[in-house]
Image (tube, rainbow, N blue to C red; front, top):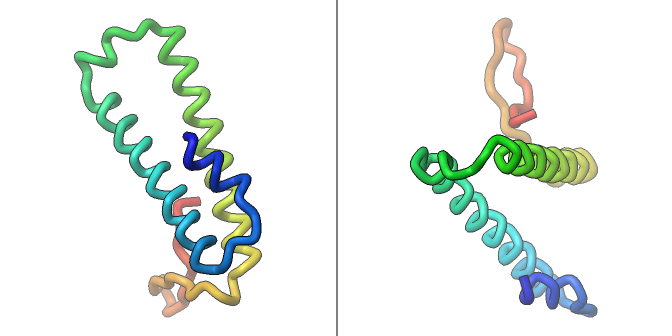
Length: 101
């Protein structure tokens, strides 16, 4: 968390430093997700949480997922011309962009 806070407050970065900060942030998210997946795949551990605790975690995770996906869609739409679309053939030969939402 300390490093993320330092990255937020850092000013005047060049493009490489901006890129490195983005990679660091995504790796931090990935490590956190990996930990959460470990928890949720461990029924013995999850059985120790009561319903209220699990409801709180569920609501928090869904809120964070929605925020991240909303940001993903916003940035993807804003920079669509820079991002090569991922396309798959549909019936009738049409192609469409695919994504999680």
